[in-house]
Length: 182
Image (cartoon, rainbow, N blue to C red; front, side, top):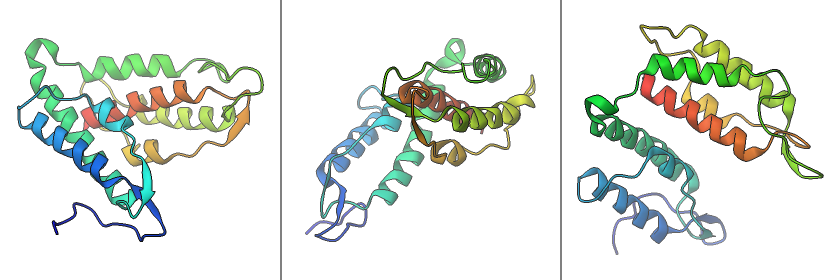
């Protein structure tokens, strides 16, 4: 019997499919070791695993994926070279410009009877994000907003709210910016 990477849930509970998790992590480790092209941080962020009885506990796997996303982003920045390096100050300015759209018009809306994120919840959180990155200037400093704040902020579901994919994509960009600013 081989050692497990993560704790498992009981037989009656569901967790991440062990073979899928192990295969993904092995691929990422090989890529970071230089054996193949590295994935993007976004690919690590959006990976999903099947839920099965007796699988890996989700919380430790999610924490490991968060740390892995950070390692991949560092590898991306290092591999970009001098010409490919991003300018954090200009990225902050660009993101701030996109996020300061008029209230209730910051993201596309879910159409018809489809549900999306509550507009008030999202706009209130986006105001917090903008306030946190307001102080980031040419010297570039890390804002008070944490990556965990961005990842764990819940939004209520409402008909006609903001489209979830558009909001999630913007939050992914905020997380990447915060990782770069660390």
